[in-house]
Figure 1 (cartoon, rainbow, N blue to C red):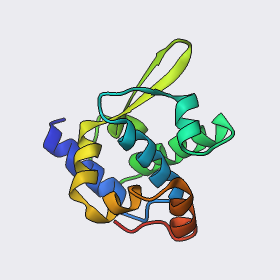
Figure 2 (cartoon, rainbow, N blue to C red):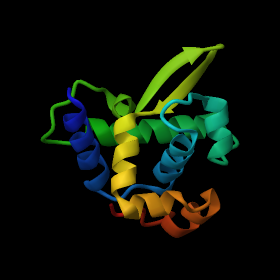
Figure 3 (cartoon, rainbow, N blue to C red):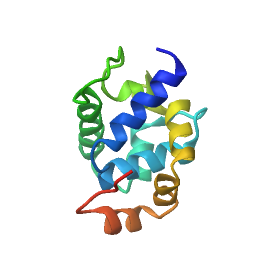
Figure 4 (tube, rainbow, N blue to C red):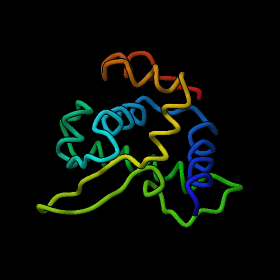
Length: 133
């Protein structure tokens, strides 16, 4: 799939219903790390203020479901593989935001503004209703 198609598919995925506060916090952690920096799942949990790795795994699973349940778009990517890279080294999963997701964030001011908030502010502001992009 070409970059333009991947980018459009990401837009479709994130605009079809509100992004949860947990998904926003995940995007914030990955976005701040940058598209050339891998972070471990432990570091991801720390950046997301999650005490349990299982909570991060749940957020990743929900994001994967969002991607996989998006109708009308045919993608060879399964779940989170569209929005981030995943690899395992040093006996731990590591993640890196995709350049396409970075581009989408940079082109949606409402999303970029939300990610500029602290984790606590994101949780408070978008906890119940999420963010409509």
